Image 1 (cartoon, rainbow, N blue to C red):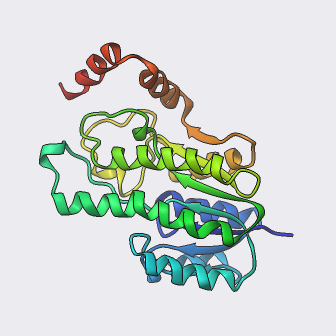
Image 2: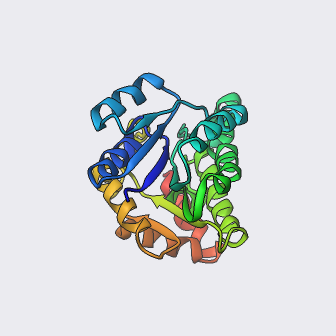
Length: 243
């Protein structure tokens, strides 16, 4: 039987690449994002068995309405939540309203999805939330995106314990991926990947038993090591990135 997978944040970037790769592997997809037009185009490209369903993860009523429609298609095998906003910059330079919207979309939106997911998944089905290696440790010019991704990492860790035996909770922590979001960065992004490579890494990782899917390893292991250092060692290293 083909898997039924709900991808939230499917209209572009990693989400669209993930949809194409899973469709190629025979999955039946429910494709969600804010743009109905983009979803319609993607569903047309992939085939009539795939369902475009627009929603806004920052709006709880929108999530609940979408979840009600998804439930009509029977239990899901997986839910993969990727939707996020990004606005790089130093804390002092960020627009407060934009920062609040990033928090609502990235962190509160993940919370909304996490609450809706258990009733939609089959027993032992998978819920994957997307953090980021930017959430491992506070780095200059990463706010407020990095802070929200640190929150998503913490949320996934809590859910892994709370839903144990009922839902297979996973955490996706990508490094730099060439998307319309990262194209806003003005610095050189080490070990940057294409969305297609990222999509394959995610699917392969979710098919293992590992809680965290992180890539590329040459970047993620370096940041993991940095995050384990005591502050007296780590903070002078991160300070160098501002110079």
